Length: 226
Image (tube, rainbow, N blue to C red):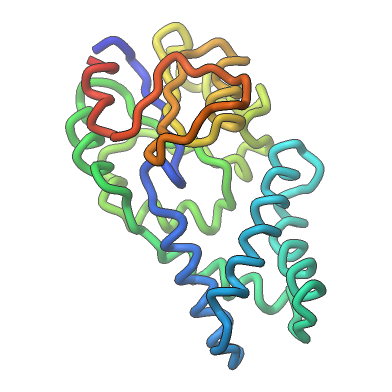
């Protein structure tokens, strides 16, 4: 193996977050009698949610605030008479049940198992990510799981990576694989480890952030990591 430690981002890299999130959204709002225009409402929520997660990565908002603030903004925009403090835990419970994997995720992880140390490195909420991971087909293959809320710092902040490498002394032989050019690739680059951008939709990279490797299919990792 070229690397002793392989860090995998979770959502959008191994886990199909889009499916899990959409299902959680629809189940939550149907529970409160909202059955119409759910697809349109979800698209509006996605815009707000992605913006607030960018704020989280930049430490403009805490994970505790994020939980309800995204719904507060959404309800104001859509003029919905709902309480974010009531909605949020229900939504998070449904989201924690979403263990859908992306194509090729289980195959590449099972292939790497035993050949290197495998760690999950995710920005997320602990009460969502821990049960999702534990209930997935990947749990038995990973030795470590690092969640930003438990660490106290999100990717791409160096404190996130410092926490990992205080526990795992493999910085000189580590790589992070993720779909986010900022949190995964810029974070890894700035910390001095190799990076691999998972780009299944073959987006044009205009960010100025340059990964060491780029793939569009998880099976391509075999030739990079071995």
